[in-house]
Image 1 (cartoon, rainbow, N blue to C red):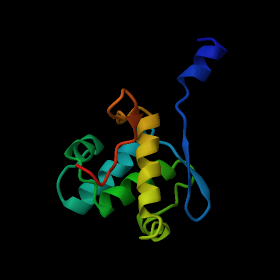
Image 2 (cartoon, rainbow, N blue to C red):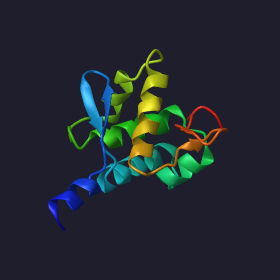
Image 3 (cartoon, rainbow, N blue to C red):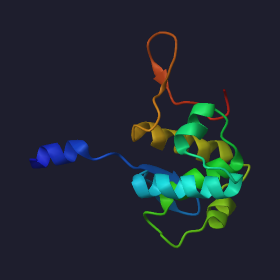
Length: 126
């Protein structure tokens, strides 16, 4: 594969500003870590696909997904630390960045809007 092909295959990471500027990256390790955290919390096997398809993303799911997307930068980061970074005043921002990242990385498709445009999925709407 040539250098242009390699660059085209790179998936964009989305910047999120919490305690500092960080980058969300959803590689396979991130997905597996988030799914494990959600499964441990709910007590049943849970996948990101199931949570996203269900359309209701709760606080525990949001925290687990953001944490999973951040641990590539800081493997020592804990769920509780991420939970402390996301407060009620920045919750919608954090959820928006999460959905932007999942969309940019091809995990979810943008919602279609009338007129042929698209918008990011709203995690608070079913």
